[in-house]
Length: 337
Image (cartoon, rainbow, N blue to C red; front, side, top):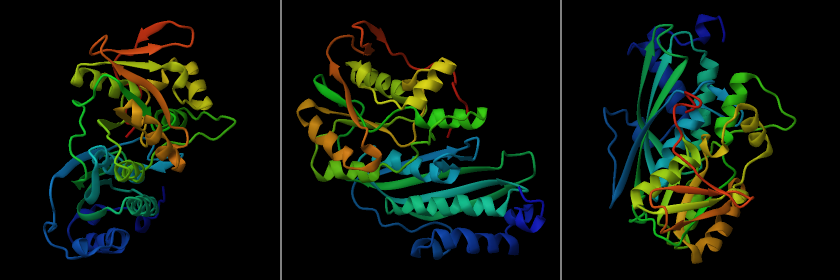
């Protein structure tokens, strides 16, 4: 972090005066430029049509910069992905920053520019926001809150609509984000570079919707990973879910870290991986559509929904044995998003 006060965020940048005005216009307005934002009203005037999805999230990841992304990219992708999981086309985002006094302006610029780049992948726009600067020691660098609004393209996709006979698809290899954050914190080095899966999922979801795939449920596997999603589904729809361990896509680096620390890959967080439940007769078509995207090339059909063991998730091992996949307990890695 620079020691030059002119290159750091000062308390005056949140004071509502000249310095704040310059920061907002030269950095935020420049990166997020659109007609609604530049109108500089107290609230964004939006044009909404039909059923609408609305979501919000706050981001406090440590470290702020990690292999494959940073807190800004994470904030945009995370909010856009929550909308996408409801089959909602991301349209408008709000964005609020809580910045610690002394934070490097260059780092802030990198974060904001990465947000603008990620917004372009879904076509969403930041149309309103807020900036607060707090004294040194009152925040860990920077916290970001984003809320998002999108038009629902297909209704009925819900955790309560999963049915026996549905296939379960995972859109890519699991556990990458959690493993990447763990590496960054512990200073571990591996022979090959492991990066977070942090990415916008809307392009993949849009391809499924355009093909009229009858998706029953979608969920991005963030905190708690695949295990949390499947357990929530089994409980909400009162069904059993069986997963084939041999079919789970897991990178060798993630497997190695799990063996080293005693973790399970399906408990680790993801930030660009989603799970789908849909009728098995449409599973191969959906899989092909996902695999056509670069981020989905490792997608796999990993299990099915059953009428046995309602409310439970069963893992079938390659050796013919079975065990329950439970909801993760405690906090494996705090502040991963």
